[in-house]
Amino acid sequence: MPIYEFLCPKCNKTSEHLCKMNETGDELLCPNCKSQGLIKKFSSFASPSMKGDQAIPSCKTNSCCPSCIFDK
Image (cartoon, rainbow, N blue to C red; front, side, top):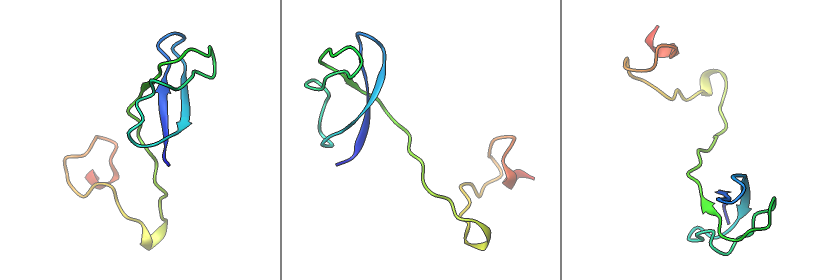
């Protein structure tokens, strides 16, 4: 089961919960204020990177952000 981030609308704290993919958060309890009914947040994720000649660049175009190493 994946870990998702949920927001408590009562105390505005974010918490992580191991739950099913279709879980909405309605039955989860906030670990901070113990209220029920958390809201699932959209979360980004990190992936491991490789070094050296095994590296896989994340951008191969010339339309990247100004700090992109591929634009230089």
